[in-house]
Image (cartoon, rainbow, N blue to C red; front, side, top):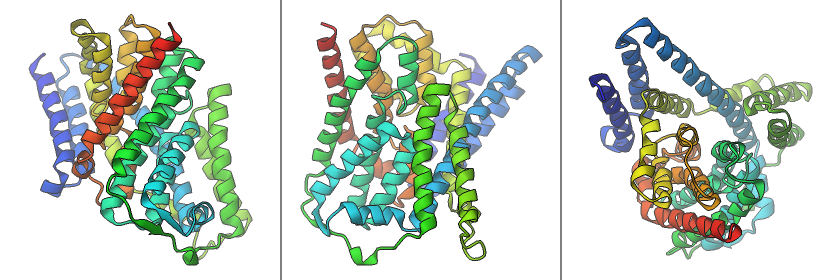
Length: 418
């Protein structure tokens, strides 16, 4: 490893430390990761030994930016939908129709777990998290308890998508590589749901109060709001079907859904003077988008310098089962898509049970840290008080639930291949 690579690794560490100690430094995490993410690529361009290497840097940077742009646009579309539905009271209406006026916190926690798990099995993790967090915020829980719910949301959302090729990109990658079959993946949902319920049980300890839902504050949604809600859910299913049948990028489908939302509101004569629908784009948490930009620039740099590829050496020095578990833990720090791509390119020899374990590990392992998954970053942007350290206080519980699910998946893999 040369001096430039050492400096780049140091920048990556400083970026992560900036996120961890945000409460101490009082410097926004998005500012820190954006600074080190952009600086790292500038250093790569400046330190390039020749034009051929600089061309490689340019190509890698263009690929990195293209991925980030797709995520940005996707986030913009989903956040705009959710911001509108929340403002119009559609999400509150769902709460009031489903939940009774009084419900125990423990029961509410388990219902939240089930909802997040099922919804994220069909919708993408970002959309599932946005909707789930909006539901939680509408309950107006005290912060200490809201943090538990948010922790469960992140874990349940990531767990729900792991068994569906439409729910998690890494699951799709492993399936397309021919390592597992659809039936194997569907069976993942059983231990994945069990691990979510285990975490819900652990988080429910000490929660014995009753939540009173004030149905009197219900906001009656207008016709436009109901139509936009319909467009939102049609867009979700169109995204799934379009991706499966015609390989249409989810970003394209959601942007089209967003355009339909705008045109529909105009056609139905939404209040364009006092509440123009285009203004809901301003309700997006742009700090979240900047954080995504910075962290993905850092990950892209690490992928370019070969750090992610070198992680496959773990399989040469330890049992595959342990290496898979560690890969899951590493996915809490490193984006799981390039990590999975590096593992697939290394042509690892593993059994079906071990590939199932890896699928679960890289799909759910990001839940161990708040910055380890898109669901965690989105949740952090929605709930004031949900920080790296406040989430980290539940690390022991998350690790236990993750380990339980990982071992259960591996055991199921052994049973079905016996």
